[in-house]
Image (cartoon, rainbow over all chains, first blue to last red; front, side):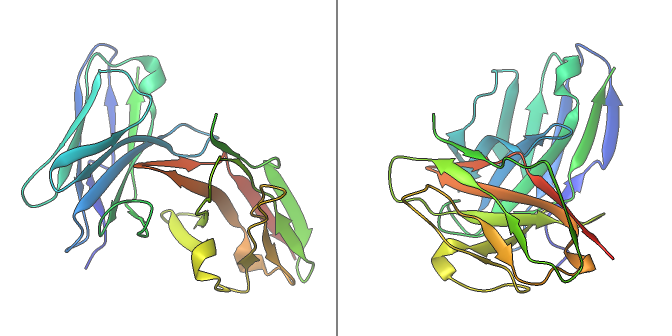
Length: 114
Length: 107
């Protein structure tokens, strides 16, 4: 198993544009979480999805949305990009809920907004 | 607010010296705490969790509810321990990470 995979590896967008980031969890994992990591800070929780339903949401504006597909892969969408959205976006998968189970992280997608 | 703090951004020690990475939390309940590590050019990975009470790569961490701390310790640091270390606290469906401490083990 390749572990959690994310695509693309990095991308550059312009302010006001929209972006979609993708994540494939480890086989058998049903939970996917998204995090934003700004340079010099720890990861900040954005969303958690479990069994295709949103189970948790961090303190992010409505410009951020996500979904989970029947195969448990997930997409994170960000609309109306701002310069401050530039960050490393991490996806993590786990067997179930976050508290009880270890999270396995992907390599991240580096988003630069110009 | 419920949060995790790591007071040191950077900690430098010499090889063979003891190391302690500090983590304090603010939580009104019985917390379950984790330490995650990120080595250079690698992805973030779990180092240890307090509930398992394991020693991983020589590291241990004890939960001190009185001091609301979960410091990470290792008696003899190795150069390969150089990495970014994050303390983390699950809160419901959320997972709160501290700001991280960069450990640099000098030869």
